Length: 126
Image (cartoon, rainbow, N blue to C red; front, side, top):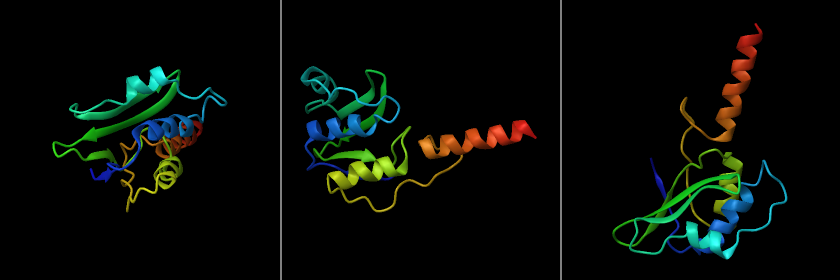
């Protein structure tokens, strides 16, 4: 899987944006607290730079990884999110990304999950 370099991105602001853009199921939540940010933004020398699973019921599903040379990257897909949400966060931080990960039968973006659900509903109704 390809990686996207976010070395020059402010991880605190990135974490806030991840939370905000993940807020598609639970609208109008309060912003992340400083304590929550301290729990998800991880300082060097850890290999993890950012670990966001579910925060207050919001499925953030974002991880950033620190290479031995200090560069920080994310995967080129955002689990449980749409391509539009992923492009929105990358564009917000002017992150160059090229092609996003191809959608396969095991893809867990929201677009593919919805397609599988619709296909299952159609197949079960025939």
